[in-house]
Amino acid sequence: MADSIKKLQDLFSKFPTVGRRTAGRFVYYLIHQPTQTTDELIAAIHELKKGVKLCAWCFNPHETSEKLCLICADPSRNKQQLCIVEKEADLLTIEASKRYKGLYFILGATLPESPRLLDLKKRVSAGNLEEVIIAINSTPDGKATTTLIERTLKELPQKLKITRLAQGLPVGGELEYADEETLEGAFEGRK
Ligand SMILES: [Zn+2]
Image (cartoon, rainbow, N blue to C red; front, side, top):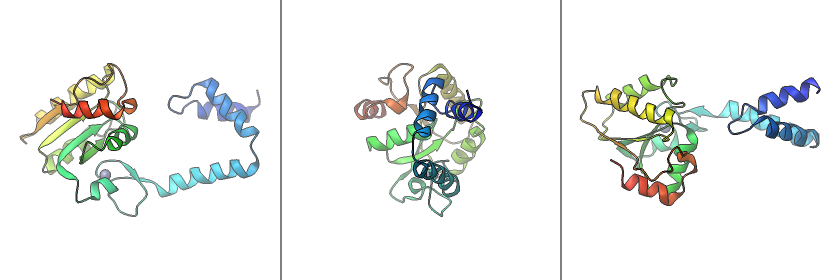
């Protein structure tokens, strides 16, 4: 196999949920596209890296010239509630359900790998929070992460209500793929 084919296949296979075989399909798809299409793709990736930055408070990617994302800057959001999620896709799923109107914090990875635990502690210490909702997947890594966050937050002097999303989310399932009804139930029944 030619080097450039293999190289691109290696790169695509690092994408979430993409295995080597699918990565290979992407490469052959691109080979058969006109140069205009591949140029557009390259330009879009450039723009993405230039224009998108992470929110200074919650790490949500956004394209405004401000430090904060649109959710953090929105005065109608409930600043007393914080929902901790593992990744951006989980935030999008929860936002789509329109059930939750508080703030978010994106861990970026499960713990202890996430370097953002310290940031989380700072946000919670500095804020006016009343409730922290831990909305992490119920995978083994996710469960360990939830326990570690709970332990960390309980060490803080604040009187916080710490809740987890109710069961009902598929066991070992990913929050990202939960439908709106399931998610609404999980928020209603959080404890
Ligand atoms: Zn934000």
